[in-house]
Length: 195
Length: 385
Image 1 (cartoon, rainbow over the protein chains, first blue to last red):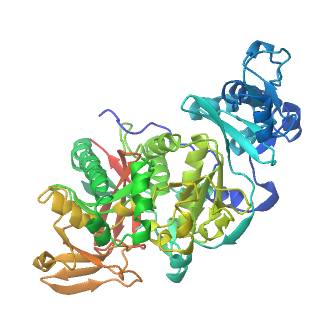
Image 2 (image 1 turned 90 degrees about the horizontal axis):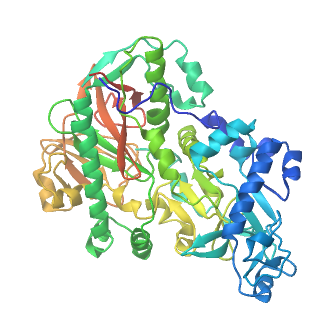
């Protein structure tokens, strides 16, 4: 018989255990791996992540920044959204240096500076570049450029309908109320929904 | 289909503990069975389990498309008035779903029969997708099972693939009833699959979800929740205080609101009404319909029951068994009684997994009573010929 469904090695658990995942990511304090925003690869390496991984993540975010950054028709419009001094004229990639700043006076649109990039918790726990490459290859993960808007919120950018739009992701806010879900289960003794 | 004895792996308890599968024992009873297995032939898996599961899922999706536009059906399913637009909108938008588990009765003869669809908050997925797979590779490696022994199990692969289709921009939050080892473990396992799919993740308790002044959901660090997996029933969420924020919170929720239709036992009579006589369906009616009385040997279940609570077995019209519980106030369905596979005083139910829209795996649970409850045991399976 030819096996149709399974291989000879079992599936992997990236985080090793479903209990530790629960414990570590569920409020066990300081040692929990968190996604981190860095402004430079050096800052990333200083936080204990492999330097090669930090560089690769930065380059990827930069690539994505050059293609996906939110576009504005004028400097005024861009600065109104992102804040004074946070925008530059793009549209002529040849003039951009590594940080995405432009030196020429092209005639393109305006985009914000990339203020940082996001390294995921899964990446930051990988021990070397080869493990990182395997992970990226198998998951399709790409690091994310980060922008800061006028109000100081963290933004990322996505392309929707062929047009780049900035969209706040997981913005910081102030919670005004909790425990609005879970009450009916509490009244039944809690938990166990599998049926 | 047969139940066979297999020598248990000496170190399986340590192996279970090592991957955080602490609930291999529950309520002081063994939950994971390492010294037995259900054996199927490939033809049996393909023809009696995989193909019918796929067909049943497709029938269910067609049903949802009609029910979201049918006030009478929504009334029968007790979807709260104020929430019907939310449910319908999530279907019209094409909100993606992740997974579900059909419970099937099959004894090796005749077609498998649908008992119910756990389409909203199914558990036992870690056991089926991961630990059962481990059991197979271990037993092949130590020569207890032949090299070509297979298992109907592409569940984890399918989960990673399905999770990869959700946006990777926001943090993928996972909410569960964290005091329950089983619920927390299930959420943590799915979170691991999400990490494998390239997501950033964070786990929180369902009660810790907050709202901000704009009605957006928030996590414990006061970040807005944009993408949320919740191992918590929609029929409860739709009736709790934060339900009023669901339409405006802007969060993508997995399973999506329209799954509240499929996790409702009311789909059993609705499916029977559309496909009466289908080989994989049992006759079923809402308890307040006159035809319900025509089923003399039957099972009466609440629309929203979980873990086999408040289920009543009727023989020749008389109640012969009733389980305790706290469900049932929203109404019941009555479904014809069917035979389960029985071996050595245990009754087996097949848990047939749908991930994305694909039938992709099997987990067997058995119980000393014909009503599968949370004291059931998980038994691995193999495909041998």
